Length: 305
Image 1: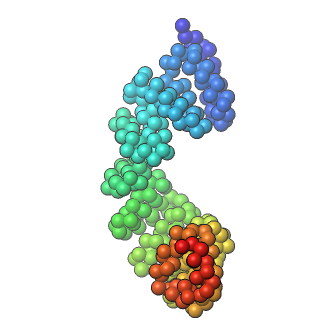
Image 2: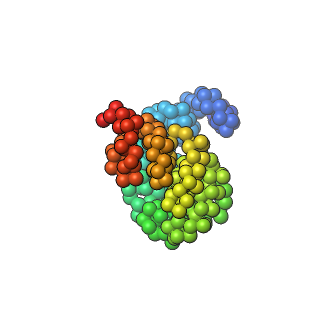
């Protein structure tokens, strides 16, 4: 026989502990609710699954989500929770099926649409990802990440007008986000709005000095018209992102353009130490022809072959 008074007492304490991020305490209290309710309280089962997932015990979490579904096969949170676990495991096919089940039950399930779109995206199903993001944005037009991610897909597909609109919307929502600023730089460069692209990349760097791609893209703009300026930008990037191999590789190419082969060689060796797989590109890169003739490069490369 269930004791509803006791159940509600433990349930209140469990919810309080969960909100305070005292997960072990919450786990023990939800287990008490589970025992007192004879395993029939779906909310406590869902929360047990969520806590186990947060603690990295995904198999236990799956078991509880499935138990919740055995009680109520229209429990949208259980489908979503299972989908999220499979998503983390990169089992996107299963995750997509479960996100869609959650959405079938609740057609306004914002989070499910978002992660469904992302799962489609990483699976290469770009058109389905676009459809899911657009549906989400019809429900919540001010979702920053949905606008930004959708813009990125459009940019990949060279639907640049649509990409520009989504990036602009994202920036209106969060004018200081470095990724939104970076992506606006990308799209402005595609539209040959070079000054605007430079401005967005500079602002992106100002907001996050550890995002290496902002330095790279900004430097590339200066590669042939002001190589030394490009080198300065890459050097700033290296100062803030010292383990990023492609910054050294690109600075090496810039040095080679102004005939500073020794500096170029130092950088390419550093790049290869960080990422030896670069060697095949270095051996084919026309800009590094003179660098490859240096003894210091030959000696180092011989160790990698």
